[in-house]
Length: 162
Ligand SMILES: CC(C)(COP(=O)(O)OP(=O)(O)OC[C@H]1O[C@@H](n2cnc3c(N)ncnc32)[C@H](O)[C@@H]1OP(=O)(O)O)[C@@H](O)C(=O)NCCC(=O)NCCS
Image (cartoon, rainbow, N blue to C red; front, side):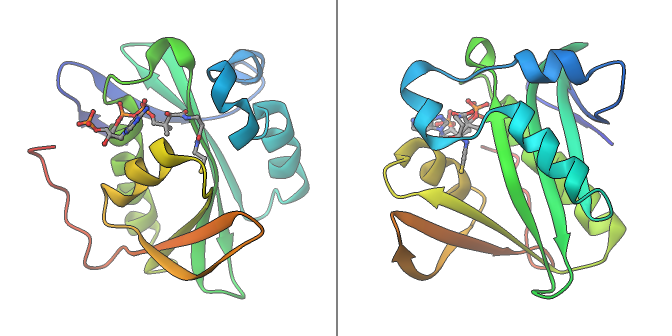
């Protein structure tokens, strides 16, 4: 589960007893808080849905820079990204993009589903641009200020120029 970023090695590691505290202490910028739940809440969700949840810390050059939680949704036959965040100290460095690429590799390797979805607040323009950058497309209508985006993992091709 490794990939070469511009200058950094990105690694996704399971959250365990040794790194969960650090994960809980990661935070986003003040103006982003309204768009995401705290990592502690995401970890609680991962605990409840432990059979289908994959809570992963994102490391760059040995430092924890972000956190991702995705789950296997058997009924919908797709993966869903419940949480995707880069700590405010590390945003804008390409780590989020590399983390998602790594995530896609992992999802494809597991091979359970050929599709991944993510739900974004309509007002979260940066996150929408972020996910659209991989080719995510809107699915259905906006509901309660949120939009669901989906991406076909089978036809996804990583664009190394980005
Ligand atoms: C969205 C988020 C995960 C992006 O993480 P990141 O590590 O900063 O992203 P990257 O540096 O890899 O950026 C990749 C691309 O995303 C887009 N992007 C990232 N941050 C952006 C911003 N603030 N404004 C506009 N576009 C942005 C850009 O297209 C960028 O590519 P570019 O730098 O070549 O233009 C991060 O901003 C974050 O944690 N936000 C708060 C939590 C959140 O909203 N999560 C999503 C919930 S649905």
